[in-house]
Structure formats: structure tokens, C-alpha cells
Image (tube, rainbow, N blue to C red; front, side, top):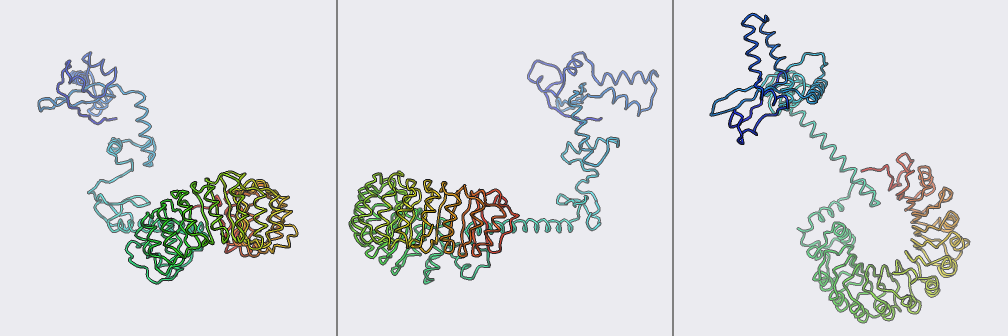
Length: 594
């Protein structure tokens, strides 16, 4: 085996004590011993040549080369440059057994990749090609050589841009261009397929159908993409204006500049889902440019300031409905001033996610606005800490149509007695009731509150009420002739419910149900879904209900012909093998990938 020569630049050949002594090639203990004893490959060669000249050894030059190769095995030539002249010194190097095994293994790997056997003749070019990073491909050509194209079989000169074909061999420039175009087309198709899958996934999560967009939708998308270049939207209608505002809120693009596009002096209803980027001056522009506003909805309005609310109370004389989410900068004094100013004008007041709405403020709101309130929402108001504040509601709220009291600061703040009193007073008008997170409520509220006083109820949400049991549901829905059926029922994480309660609810309201959530009602079995026959049901959330599998999905699709969306997150037995009815989308299966 031949070795490539390694050149090292040092200052001196002689073994001196200076710094130059440290600059040497790699050597072993045996090499160092031979050097100290004055034994070198050159001396061995000279002695051998002397014996050949004296006739002591006979052989051909080839045999001499083999002899020298055996004698010089595991030795390395080090070129030392001194005073501009090359002085050759040969230093005997012992081949380390471990390094030798690594070399043999690497050689076998290269030869196996090239399709050769270990018995084939081995040449030094293989080592040189591997050392130069050219790989171990058999017959590899060099740039500038002539080669036959593997595609069209024409002669051409290899250059750095020449590609190899799938079957091996190089391609001429024309075939290389075709190969590049083919690879680009493959990448483009993969990108388009990925975009299509993402589009389908987004539409699925948005509960929408993927269909050919209308010209109107394309125009709206173009406007939202270039919203910062738009000076005025013009008269495009309230529906299209609402679509654009929702898209901007979803993209977090609603700011001080884009807000002006939606402000109009004749506007009576304004709704923004994400106001996190609006500043104090932007909120004042709403009241300044839209003095006729009657209904105002501002969600995620964390930057709404005290001055803004005061400006609303004085500059919006027709305001009668307000919904605010997250106005945590507004203090109690400003709230009280607002209710004193607005007075009896408010018919709908919805507030959520703030800790600066105290017991005194709630009492003042009930006193000033409670007489005419038809819709009230109090959600996640951690500033209300006394039960007496909630107990004041039956004394002031007498015309409620929509009531939501959800996630109070303590579960004991809202109990059965409070709700029974409220329902008894608002029995004739109440159509929607949301009590999510009021976990102190029990079956007594169902039997003595809802059953006698909720004959007109159409929406019921009791999420996270763990004390509601199947016995209470049976007592509520069995022969409940006063109520003609609920349209929306949400029972997420009502852990104490089982088949008996849900089946009784389905027997009573199954024909009128439009939306149903039984997420995490873990004790349900297949019996519930076998009885479920809801001709008008369009949405079902049955996530984390282990009884739901491929067979149940097929059965639900047959018994609910109008069902469009089924959420089945957490049900690992729902797979892509399920026979899904056309028009019904199943969301949350583990087998679904983007």
C-alpha cells in the first residue's frame, strides 16, 4: 500500500532544543526509537542496494520494489524545506494496528459502494479519490474529460454543472437542463400539494367548506392584503364591512390607521374582535366620527383607558348596548361615573376579564341600569368577592332575555337560591342562560329552578358543573311539557352525568337541537349514541368520550342527517377508516395530518 507524502515546514532538520523541535509529523514510540538509533529507510535501502551490487541478492527491479515496499511498510516521507532547498528525510513509522483496521474497513466500505469484491484488484487511486472527497464511485470522470451522455448517448465534455442520471453516468448540457426542469416541477408540485393540505386543514378548523371563491370574496381578500394602501372602503355594505373587519382582527392588522376605514357618521353598530393594537386616540376617534352608534363591541380592549370610557358616555348619546372584554385599565371610579351618566339607556351590558369591577360598582350598575337591562354578561370578574352583591340581582333584573354569569371569583358566590330567584322573576322572558364554571350549583337548581320557570329557554350552557347528576337531568327533562325543546346545550366537563341523563335530554330536545356539546362526559357509553336521533343537529362536540369510535361516527352521521361538524378530540379509536357521510366533517382524529 502506497502512502501519500505529507509535507511539513520546519526550521531545522537537526534535533535541537529550540522551538522548531516541536514541529514534526505524526510518529509513534517505535519511530522515535528508530530515529534515536540512527535507523532510517534510506540506510536500509542503501544496504540492500550494496548487497545487490555485490551479487549477494538476485532479483528483478520489480522484486526489488516489492522488497523495498515490504521493508518500508508503515514508513512515511517527510519533506523538510530549509534555506529554500528541499531536503528529503525518511522517517520510519510503525503502522498502528487499530489505525490499520480502520483503513481496511474504510477501504472495504468504499469498494462495496463501488460494487467491487474484496478479491478485485485494488489501486492507489481509490485512496486518492477518497482523500480528495471525490467519493468511491467506480469510473468517476474528471471535469474536462469526454464522456457519453447517459440520456441521449451523445459525446460531450464534462463540466462542473454536469448531473448524473438515475441509472448512473453523466448527462450532457441539454439533458441536464431537462433534468433540472423535471426536478423544479417536482418541487413545485410538492409545494402546491402542501399548500392545498394546509388550506384544507384551515378550512376544516374554521368549520368551512373549501369551494371556489366568489368574485366578492376575492375582492375582499385583495383589499385585506393591501389594507395599508387603501384610503377609503366606500359604500360596500355592512356585511362586507364586517367581513373585512373580522379578517383584519384575525390577522392582528387592526390599528390606528386601518380603524379609520370603518368609521362612518351614519354607523349604528360597530364590532371589533381584537382591539389590542388600538391606542387611546383611536378609541376616541370611534366616538368622534360615529356619534350615532347604538351597539358597540370591543373585544381584547386592554388599552382602553378611563378617558375613553368617559368620552363614550358623553359623546355617544344613543348608545344602549355595550360589550367589553379585558378593559383592565378602567378603575371603579370611572365605571361608576359611566353608569351615572348612561343611566337607564343601557339595555345590554356585557363585561368580562377584568379585576377592577368591584362589589360597589356592580351594586351601582344594578341600581342605575338594572330596570331596563335585557342582556347581562358577567364573566371572570375577580373584583366581585361578596355573595351579597350577586344576591342583589333578583331585586333589579326583571326583563332579562339573555343572562350569563360565568367563572365567578369563588364558586360559593353563585348558588341554587340565587338562580331560582332570578328564574322565577324572569321566567316569561328568559331564552338564554349560561352558567359556566358556577360549580356550586346542584340538581336542586335544575328541578326547582329550570323546570318550573324556564319554559321559554332555548339555550342552556352548564359547562364545568360537576355536581349536576343524571338524576337531576332525568327530573328536569322527563315529561317537561312546559318547554318545547332546547336548541343549544353545552355540557362540557359535567363529569357526574351518565347515559340516563343525556338520553332523557335527547328524548325531550332531540328534534330541536342544533348544537350539542358533551365533551369530557366520560361515563357515556354507546347506548347514548344509538338513541341519538337529531334531525336538525348541525354541530356535535363529543371529544374525550371514549365510547365514540369509527362505528359510532358512522351511526351518528346516519341518525343526524344535517350534522356538518363533529369534534372528536381525544378519541383515539376514531380513525381515518371510519365511513363518514358526505357533507359531515370530523375534526380531531389522530390520523389526520397536514
